[in-house]
Length: 569
Image 1 (spheres, rainbow, N blue to C red):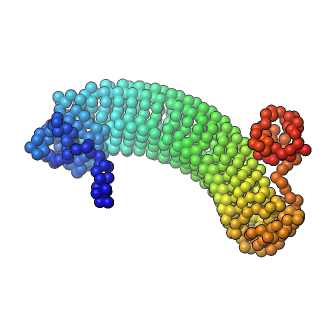
Image 2 (tube, helix red, strand yellow; image 1 turned 135 degrees about the vertical axis):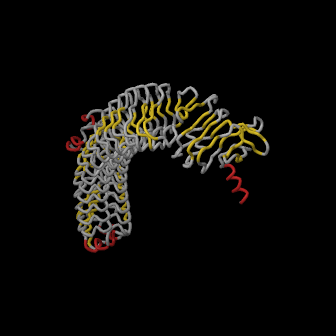
Image 3 (cartoon, one colour; image 1 turned 30 degrees about the vertical axis):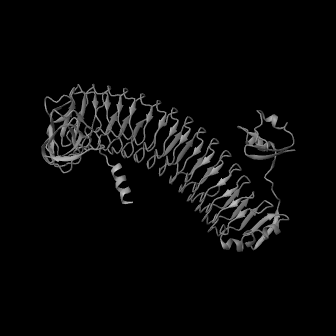
């Protein structure tokens, strides 16, 4: 076992096969090639003051030419103040002096073929790529007008950088290029720039940003955590708002989403606490997870009919949200979409929605009414839990399952009608609905553990089926078994008194008419479903019927119309 562990550790070390590490003049090196006698500057820790990287490092009396500096070779060496790079170094990894907060100068030998330095800043030899500004730089920075690329993390952690002039020669701003430049309060992006990298301006203190029309790509989290940012202008050239783009921009109050945008990613406006309103154009197809989470000043939202999907927890904890308009293009209310929207009084779910996810409206404590259409097939766990002002719920007969804790702690719910389409009620589904008085079952379903636990005010339970539903022992409180009246179909009292768990009811009355779950075809039913319909026979075959008059030409029998069992006589 010990040998195996040692072998695995060797496999996971980030050094080349047969590489040799050694130290020369206080710096760490790794041999690249014994044949060519070359080595590279390896990871160094606690290097301080002024250092000169030698062009040759000696190990065991052998001279190795120093040709490379690895990525982040001196990262975090806060005591380092000046570094000199010899002409032998022809390859430098990304951000070699990352977060060296006291480094003020990176000097390069004049005859180096690939690199140069200007005023202590590292560039490519052609001065087309700005590789790294020393993190200890203070004040205003002027980028030469030959530069076309600001490399990844070029100014990362330059905490004293107050302003920067980007010339119109620049076409690309790399990942984290200005991230953690805490003193940077303003920046002008020229119209030569085509792409802005991931987290490019993260944790800067810029107040406003205008993205020019030349930009076609703005990376993930480009302005994440810009807590002083108040306004942003996004051009029509941008088609996607990537994840985390304006996350934690707590003072952002003005933003215009252009009609070119087709996708708003996850967490884009999360915790934008001063965002009062936002217009989502009809070009948008999807809204990502947690997109508007903790937008505590957002009062209303209209989801246009172009939007097909709204991500999980998209409007989670929007505590001032009072109005929601969901278009009929949305097919699902995802997990937690409107959870903790504590001032939302009502919601109308369009008939395009087939699924209500877990915690979709959980803890919407001011929610009084909710309209669930007949298109919905299932209600997820905790979907309406803690909706303490919800007095009634109309469960359509398209629903087949009610998830665990779906309506738990709905302490104002008085009655609940479970249609014949429901085949299962999850554990704790109506737990602690302390004002619930009437429960109406229309099908032979499965009732989960503690589904009606602590619903001590239930006085009547109605079961309309001849075959008793399957019930777990703790589905009801003991006091309910003792005091509530169980109403069952005429002639089925014996079946219920001998059925497991149902026999615990002290008062069983057979005063109901048994239901089969089959409805007669009526004008009212057809009027209700006049928007659209699907008809199947009991073999599962969809029938080719396109007009309502054709429904009346069906042969006698049972059919499924929009989820309802219909008896044609």
